[in-house]
Amino acid sequence: MDSFISQRFCQECGSPLKGRSDQKFCSDQCRNQFNNRSYAQKLTQQRQINRILMQNHQILAHYLLIDKKRKVLELDLRVKGYNFDFHTHQKQAKNGQVYIFCYDFGYLRLASNQLLLVQGSC
Ligand SMILES: [Zn+2]
Image (spheres, rainbow, N blue to C red):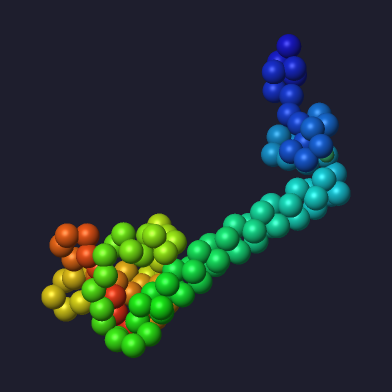
């Protein structure tokens, strides 16, 4: 009964495993297939994030085309497709205010759902 309970299976093809307790795959082929697929998934995810960041950057660039600083409503950015879940980094000003950046453009949250958009160095 014990061997039935502790039976393990290949993570790629589902075949029962008979080797060491830390064995995850039945063969090198299954290991390679599994790793290649998870690498492809990571790459896809990375591309999706890059696309979101590029779009965010483009939206900020649009607002900062003429002025290097500008107040906008958060809603206006959302309407244009800005995704507030993604940014590249944040910076704290000397006065303690935290600016959220998407590459070289950033924003500071103000009262009444307003944002102060700024262009700065990364
Ligand atoms: Zn297998």
